[in-house]
Length: 73
Image: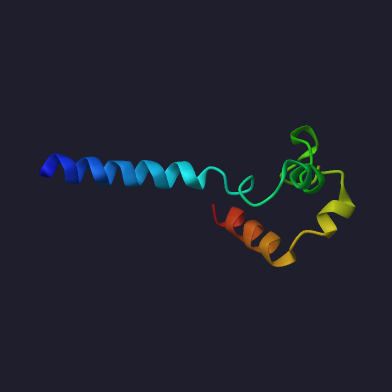
């Protein structure tokens, strides 16, 4: 009986992980994803240091918190 309970729990965990892997593709068609997402080669997590316009769009409160935290180190 214990084996079946353990096996059932393991299957439930595995199924939950598998269904969570398709969060975008389960809701959008391939054409919609292609229109909304940029190619990986063009993605940048943050603007380059020389991109002043890009940094102007950043959230000022978050920037101040990061600077404050860095000064504390």
